[in-house]
Amino acid sequence: MIDRIGRARQSGRKIWSLLFVLLALFCVIFFAARGRFQATASTKTVGTVLAPFEIAFSYVGQQVQRVSSNLWEIATVHEQNKMLKNEIEQLRQQNTMAAEYAAENARLRELLAYKQSAQQFDLLAARVIGRDAALWTSTIVVDRGSKDGVRENMAVVTGKGLVGRVTEVAPLSSKVQLILDVRSSVGTLVQRTESRVTGIVTGTLDNPYMPQMVNIPRNADVQDGDIVITSGFGGIYPKGIPVGQIVSQRSDDTGLLKVAQIETAVDFQRLEDVAIITASREAPPAPIQPAPLSPGAAAAAQVSATQAKAAGQ
Image 1 (cartoon, rainbow, N blue to C red):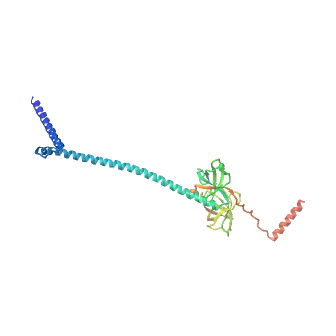
Image 2 (image 1 turned 90 degrees about the vertical axis):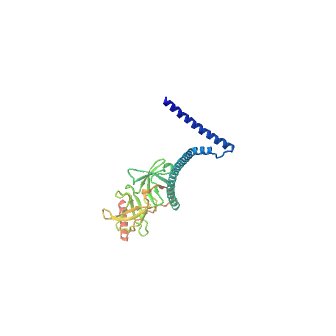
Image 3 (image 1 turned 180 degrees about the vertical axis):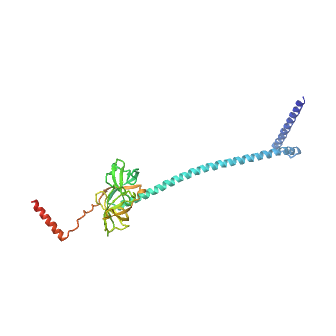
């Protein structure tokens, strides 16, 4: 019974408090609407009562606004960071492509300059598309074939010098044997006017990237630093194409001849674009004339020829 009376009193107090607050709010709104509001004692009391609530609501509103603003800024910064990362990645790709285009442009300019200087040749530009894995320093594959007019034994060059010759031809590609191959043999001569010594450049297993010039007479005028070019003998490689430079010399196993090691004019480790010589308007080299005989030897040869003719009769 006592508990019921206590709960009834508490409920009555809550109701009266709620009515008082509602009445105060009604008065404030009424007088403010009519423009007749005056700061009487009762309204000051209401303002004093409501002030803590207003301060709390204002503080909560400011904090909510601040948190919302921070969250918006964080979301904006995250989106901007994502956009900047994508832009940086695109710029990196563009920079890589630009560098690749610049390198390709430099190689093509080199081939174009060689084509303009070597007008005695008809050149067909080709790109290296593969290497023989088992014979890395021996053969390459280019993207030109029989449909482009390529045939076997055509010489392959770059703007710097000799690369090799075509050995196999397919409709859309061809295989090129490099001068580094141990099976390759290129007729060459020393370009220096005082020398003009001939020899054969072939690959070696001891140093795959540095071929050697063999069949050099022991007393031949050959010096380190001499430029070696194609001699034109053999009918495959036209005369005058740079092959490389002599860097060292030694005697061969017999001691009768010398062997010169050649630093190639072409960097085969960075070979990407080449040119195939499809036609040459250069005159073939003159055949080697035998050395003139002495008067005694000439007379002996004439007597032998006369005897042979008489015996034949």
